[in-house]
Each structure stands twice: as structure tokens, then as C-alpha cells.
Image 1 (cartoon, one colour):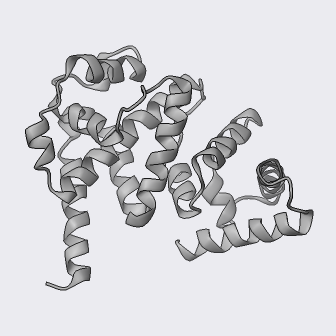
Image 2 (cartoon, helix red, strand yellow; image 1 turned 135 degrees about the vertical axis):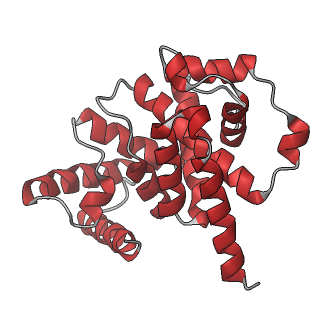
Length: 224
């Protein structure tokens, strides 16, 4: 078996495992998790996981030391779904306090299973972040995918998320970078992204900021 065939089987196995989790976590989270796996290249997944855990801990969604993949694994062990609770936060607390991780089974998990656990955990914690931030809509999977493609640090990802939401903007990060928005929306996104980059990199001048935005657009469009 060639390396590309092996990688293909690895991903298809993870996607299949996530799809089978619909009875445990519901169709909405399954759709999020499968989309996350399909759209984001494997080497970038850990970048997003670090950012999500960083933001989640700052907001109190998760606790110190909690791992995304363990949250996902526990969700498959629970006989309760997220909709059985008043909030995703309560669901996460249920997984934390009421579900004991089968460590023997978990430690024997295949790479495909661990990837599936991570994707499920991402879908749960992302929804928890959305609720904690009191967003009008859940953070779309494409926002996290774009953060991963751009290899944004945890602080950078948090800054963009906060900037977009504080300006009452949809989280159409990738749609802007791919050139899919209107002229008016493009101007607003360029302005907010430029301001965020300047805040993160005060040593950069306006030309360097524009070059950075152009570079981000190229990365996004190369991954259509």
C-alpha cells in the first residue's frame, strides 16, 4: 500500500467513525466534525486544537489540563446528548464529572480513532465557546479551518475572533480571503483584519500589513 493510499484510508476511517457518532452527539456536531476533517489538512489540525483549547480555558469552557480528544472520547461513552442539557457548558461539565474515560481502550485507540475523537471534541468545545461569548450564531467550522490554514497562533486566532465579533461581523474569514464577498464587505474585512494585524505586530508598517493580507489571500485561495 502506497503512502497516499494509507493516508486516504486513515482519513476516511476517521470520517466514518465521526459519522457513526450521530446517535451520541447529534447531526449538527457530526456535520461540524466531518467538515473540519475534510477541509483542514492534517498537519494544521493541531494548530487549531491549541487555539481552541487556549480560548476555551480563558473563557472557562474547559479546565486546565483537559484535552480535546478526551472530551470527544467521553462524548462517545456517554448515554446523553448535548440537547439533554440547557447549555453546552453543562454538557461539557457532565462529560468531565460523570463520565470516566476508559483509559485502557483509549490508549489502544488507532490513529484514525484519535483523529475522530479530536474532531468531535473540537465540535463540542467550539459550540461551548460560541455560547460563552454569547454569539448570535455558532462559530462556523470555516473560521477554524481558515485559522488552521493560515497557521495562526492561539493569540492571533483569539484576536481575530474577538475583532470580528466586536464589530458585529459574520465570521466569514475564509470567504473574504478567497474573494467571495461584496465590495462593501471586502472593505470592512480588510479594515478589521489590517487593524488586528497592526495590533498584533505594531512594528509593521502599512505596506507590510497589505503584503501580509495579500499573503493570507494566496494561502487561502491555494487551498480552495
